[in-house]
Length: 105
Image 1 (cartoon, one colour):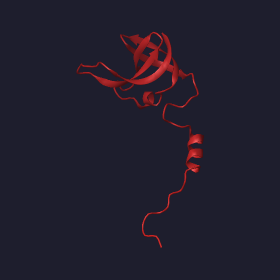
Image 2 (cartoon, rainbow, N blue to C red):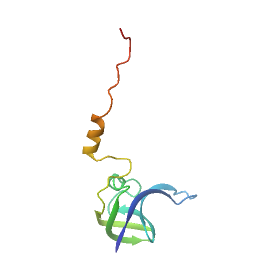
Image 3 (cartoon, rainbow, N blue to C red):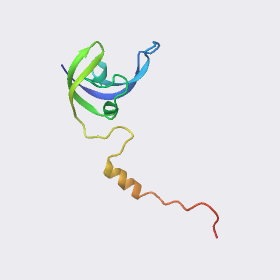
Image 4 (cartoon, rainbow, N blue to C red):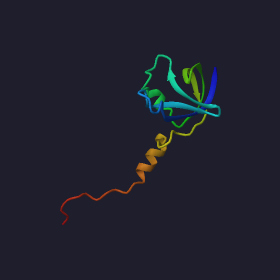
């Protein structure tokens, strides 16, 4: 099965003992909890790195969970709150240098 949508972090199972924040795929038809086949079910750093990205993915749907076999990033935009390496270097170079603290003569 194929799905396409934006990867976001959302609270799932609200009010239940299994309530948690999860990485989900938000599509036009709904949202699906993402899990890589063989990946950790609650905390997968690879999937967290995809938050904010648009994905085209392939896998199996089990209830509201989408088990990822493979995926492609559709957009080139960096995830929210993160700058691409080149832009981050440019921003760091334009920062004003602070004066050292302490006694001044």
